Image (cartoon, rainbow, N blue to C red; front, side, top):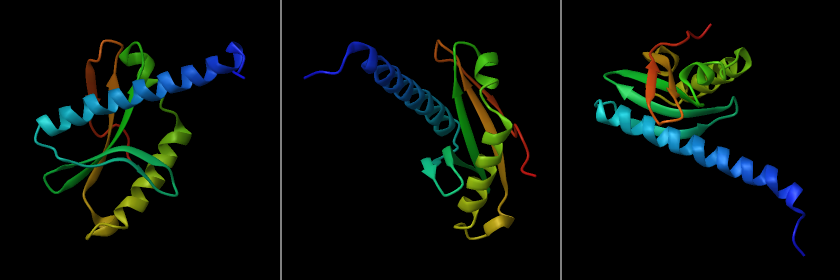
Length: 129
């Protein structure tokens, strides 16, 4: 017996959103790699939350949050205060596993991906409080 069409639509939308988000992360990861910033981790998950991409630039760790939408502006609005707090908590947990710990040089970038796959990166988009 198959599920009614109305109950499968959310599942299809969810799968489509997941695939779209994953593709956006792939685009951003390739960009960082192409700029000589090796990607250390993808979709790193700690107790505090998930970090889409962790890259290295020189001695600094770069925590990258990827947001995709039809426009850059719409993508930027998808990052709220609660999510920023979760990202900071996850980054703090990640730093706990690094040789310099919380003294590690780091920053948070926001990578926006529009409907055409273009990328705009806002370096040091927010500071951990």
